[in-house]
Amino acid sequence: MKVEIDHKSGFCFGVVNAIKKAEETLDQGEKLYCLGDIVHNGMEIKRLEALGLVTIDREEYLNLKNCRVLLRAHGEPPSTYEHAQANNIELIDATCPVVLKLQQRVKKAYEQMEAEDGQIILFGKKGHAEVTGLNGQTKDQSIIIEDEEDLKQVDPNKPAFLFSQTTKSIDQFQQLAQRLQKNAKQPLTVKDTICRQVANRVPRMKEFASQHDILIFVGGKKSSNARFLFDVCKQTNPDSYFISTLEELDENWFQNKQSAGICGATSTPQWLMEQVAEKIKAL
Image (cartoon, helix red, strand yellow):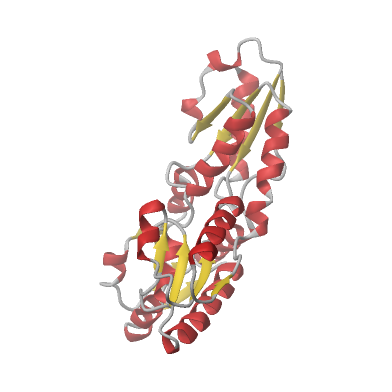
């Protein structure tokens, strides 16, 4: 059987940078905390924790002093930096440059809207780390749009800026923008802030999925990007399967198949996809 790994799959630049910073700091032998999962992939987290990385939640972070803490690629709200400054915490800031620029744009727009009694609208997943960081730039005053029900919060009689979480679907964002524009009675400024490194994977995934009899998508259960990209694959190739570990592979899937494709999310490590390929060959 032919087994191929999609060479354009796996970690995006922001994740590569965060993991590199974590490894470099751990190599110095000092204790390093990470605020939240460094990447939405359990296998990669286990690898880094074996090197000494300690994953903590926000409540644990607020009780820390005199230590080093890594901020992952998703970005953080201003309150995270304020706590660090007040408690002698050295931050290893691995915020993705794309996210950092977006935070700055959201903050500037919020200042303008605050002066004009306007509103900031964020298209994203509630509770997602990136969205929490963006909302923090607006003193948590953003209207976060995740589903149909959330649209009721938007006041068409007020001016607004519309931004998007960097990993959302371009098509869904454009549909939302058109709908809001149609109802708006005051100026609505639409800012397409979707990361093209992520968005451009969609046509690539469709092409790759169509080239194989069976597709194995490797991703973390917590990753919204993984779920989104897997759905793209599944729509193109019904013989697509989502796995997070080698143990989830089922040899029955490969009966009478001539070629298998392996791909992953922006949070999927290359080494894990390679292990999956080796196991499929062994099967």
